[in-house]
Length: 152
Image (cartoon, rainbow, N blue to C red; front, side, top):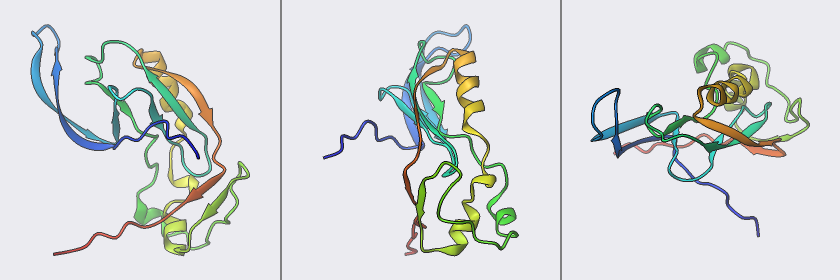
């Protein structure tokens, strides 16, 4: 049975004790959008389905980065721009991994070219002293499923 290394959300609002600038430590709400908390151990920094992913070890006291790390590189192009390219990418990536997805529109929206490279994010986090890359991971299989939001 595979062992789960980490399971964190990348959108959250949590309460933390932080020192901001020269001020005394105080209880503050930290809103994370596309960021992982640093108090859960290692943090994932996923790449696109055509890029490597990283496991990051948070370093430092966390005050300079609000106990948060980037959760991936983010989109280079908005979803709408990606859909202007109608050719559906293949199910095998440049890294030799397989993509399992039955939604052709999602395959176009989530094409690797729509995302920034994750290596620059890892380099910046290391340079800033927020995290250290401890494992570079090559995807083998990527599942792409559009999450259904139910309206009430």
